Structure formats: C-alpha cells, structure tokens
Image (cartoon, rainbow, N blue to C red; front, side):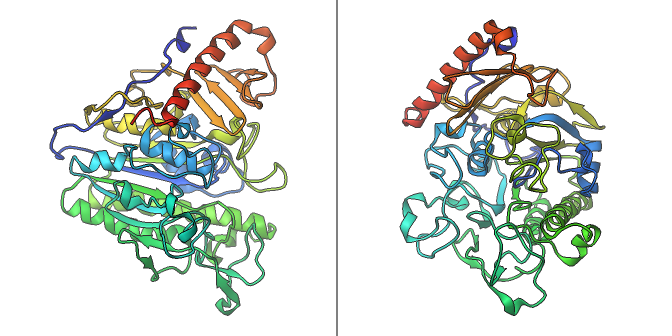
Length: 467
C-alpha cells in the first residue's frame, strides 16, 4: 500500500522573488455541470465539440480528472486555493464565501507581475451589498459579500451564480426551470434576476444579448490582448455558465439539433456554442504569438444535472451525477494545453483534481513556501514533464453526508459519513458496479484511517486554526 502512505501533500507554496519575465500565462476555463460524457472526445455521439476535441488531441487529456466537489461553489474555491472547501466553510452551493484569510492564486500571482482577470460565474460570495441580485446578493446577505476583486482579480466581468446560456439577463414570462427556445420577441421577456458586475462594483449593461459564452469571451479576450501587448504575464479565469440550467441556445447553434426535444436541443446547442468560444480563444492566443507559453486548462465543476435518462447530460458509463460522490458526480472532462511542455497529444490515467491547480502553477514558477497551512492539491508538474505516472497521495472528498477517498486504484465511499464503507477497484470497475470491501478489509482499514486523519485536519482548518 505504498501509494497510500503519504497523508498530506506539500504545504502551501507562495510568493517568490523572481521577476515576471519568463513566467507562463495561465488560463483556467471551466464549464458548469458538464458531464464526463458530454464531449465528442469522450465519446458523445450527438454533441459537437470540435475545438475541445482538437485541444484534447493536441494536449494532455486526463481520463481521471476530478472536481473537488460534486457541486459548483466548493469546486471553484478549490481551484483558487488548492484546498478542500471544508477547510474554509464552502460546504455546498450557495453556502459560505471566500474568506479574506484564504490565499488565492490571483493574490499570489499578482505579486509576481501577473495581470489577473475573472470572467463569468463566480459563486464564491455575493457581488453587491445594496441590490437584490441572483441567489443571495443584496442587503440580506452582506456577510457573504466577497467579490472577485476582493480576492486578487484586477479585472472582472462576473455573475454571482447561474444565468440563462443565451440572452443571460432575461427569461420568458412563463419560463421553465430547465430552459427554453431563444426568444424572437424580446417583448415577451422579463428580467432573469441577476447581473454582470465589473471590478468597480458596477452593473454592466452593454453587450448582453446573444450567446452567453460569447458574451463572456468578448470581455476575456481584450484583457488577454492588453496583457500580451504589454508583455505582461496574465492569469485568466473563464468560468462559463454552460450547460447549467436554464439551457438556451441561439438559432445558429440549435440548428444541428432540431430533431431533438426542446430541453435536449438547447442543452446540446449551448455546449457547441461554448466549444466555439474555446476555439476562438485558442485562435486568438496563436494570433497574439503567446500560444506556446500559455497553459490552458479546461474542466467542469461537477457532473451532469438531473436524473439519468430524464436529462440530456451524460456521465457516460460512470455511476452517479451531480451531487454524488460516485464517479459520475466528480469525474469530469479535463484537458491541459501547453505547447511549450506538451508538444504532442497524450492521455493519462493519473488521478488529478481541481485542487492541484494552485500547487502546480506555483511549482512551475519555482515558488517558495509561505507558511505551513495544509493544502490538498499536489503539483502535477512531474506528470506534465513525463516523470511521474502515479499520484503520491490520495484525494479526499466530503459533501454533506457523503465522503470518499480515492488513490491510483481504489475508491473508498460512504453515503452515511463513514458508518458503513464501500470499496471499488477503479482500474477494473470504473462504473463502481461491484463493492469489494468484504474482499479487501486491509485496504478498507488503511484507507479509512487515512481518510479520518484528513477529515480531522479539514475540521481544524475550518475552525480557523490555519490562520
């Protein structure tokens, strides 16, 4: 059980005394509720994702890439902190907020000359203290005010939470929660109830019609162009709303899916529209001459919404969906494009997680440690460089009463906070169809002990003892 021996990853790296010169650019893209089986390169026979397929073919494709949680807010926090969300109180969607004591990637990278920008969904706190906005924004939840600009981002074009994926500020007078065909007559619309906000805390009111992924990219690309023209390294977070409900697709993107019912054609169409913007971004990086030295990550924040067979999102052969700690809830599409290091297409079965972003990025700029607070991610640089094939420490999960721990082979899972345990061999049984806990009591015992120590560490962090 050598692969289980390391309880905690390396401690948090931080600020280094290097100049910004030579630092790679970094882009973190994330879809919202995109299932493992919702892309062409993962075998979806319906949804057209040519740009993601090309990115996967030319980059590093992760066959086991995990969101830190089976819902959105906790996963997003892990991307920026390298820490499990139970360490800082974002236990579920619309719960808690990013605390000022947390050290985020944009805060750390800004100290080394990076321009930092956030574009799209935030969901790590409210964006206004005065206006009623989205799920929690406004006077009733002032304690949860924690916008991107308070967490290290120079430029923002952000929403608190979800929006429709087309014409994001409006909905039909009688709208379903799942989605609708795009409105030809905007007079039949009413406000959706959310806003886009900039880094000055102002509502953005221009260029908000049409595909939401395009609207987001319309703000991200000028930010990238400005940084590139100044030879300034940039850290860009692009968090699409697609394909979170309500799903809506415009006429040009729903065209290929007209034979499907309303829910399905809008779901498929909005993913193809998002894929188009991924291609637009990649083309712009090439045009600017920064493609080689830019890391572009793509992932999803959790598995697909809805019950299997009743919703169009796909977890493929994996068990579970959004809100589950089975594989279908947390194993998501994951791709890294970095031509300077990944010179040809590769795929890996190495387990990786969104918490790995921070230690990987700080490792590649040769960062030094700041303090001893625990983080849960590890640097993926040895994997990217082709020097490692196995993860040195397991990945822990907590979500409400569900808990899990996974390593290079086994998955320990409990739906009742560890009162009873299931064990799966993910190499032989990715679908988690056979519980083998009774066959491997030694594995269960060792993994249970590791999980409990990790859980206790998260609880200490949640009590503020890291600060």
